[in-house]
Image (tube, rainbow, N blue to C red; front, side, top):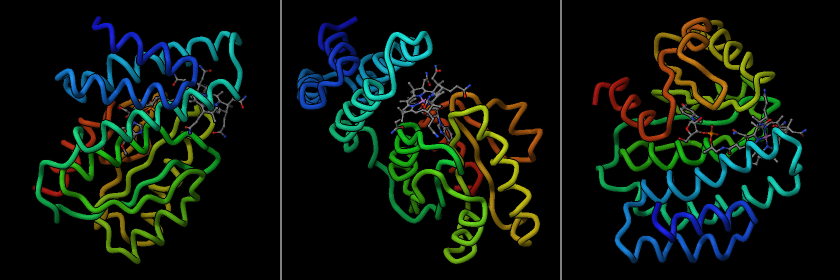
Length: 212
Ligand code: B1M
């Protein structure tokens, strides 16, 4: 692995926000692809953080500072990851479901959607099913995008699908789901239109769903 990527991963694990941002810029200047920096540096570091968190070697405050470092790094990469396609591909209402405060993956997915020319309404985290549905109606959205990182909050995705049916908009809006514990089988079981494993694939799938 390149030295700068290893350093990004290390600094992210230590929660050194400014160093991570600086190193991401350095990696871009050295000619590395933004996607490679994201995967080999930022996400690689976050994987280690996740494993240590699971093993009770580190705790919420440390994870939070790493999450902030991740955000600082992705901000640097944002213009390089996104932005090549024309706008006007459609409207997406996106958020992390009720009870869930994880937003790093959601923010990456939004970056990719915007890069493919979608207008995204970001509802943030801990979003109730009714809020997704009301916003989709008000904004005449093409897609509702749901993110969940906890096994305990995944079922809320099913509630959103049901709420869309009850509101009579299910045939007008596609529902996409994702997040580390979510699977294709789960997505099928709740009647979602699409599951994708990562952010770039989510953006490709969204284009497909709107027929662009
Ligand atoms: Co949390 N946490 N956390 N956490 N946290 C996990 C998810 C956990 C797996 C850690 C572990 O035990 N190994 C575990 C869940 C276990 C489970 O559910 N079975 C866990 C837990 C238990 C908790 C708390 C309950 C801990 C506590 O308080 N005791 C608590 C819950 C708070 C709450 O939400 N109510 C909690 C809190 C936190 C922090 C606040 C400290 C912080 C979040 C900060 C933030 O997001 N701003 C945090 C973090 C950072 C993590 C880990 C370490 C990393 C998550 C992450 O950002 N990954 C995580 C461990 C892990 O996942 N390995 C963990 C990087 C991110 C880019 O990946 O979000 O998966 P991800 O997104 C990917 C894909 O999934 C996909 O694209 C993205 C990029 O390609 N994707 C989509 C995501 N959404 C999509 C939507 C799509 C398509 C694709 O279509 C619409």
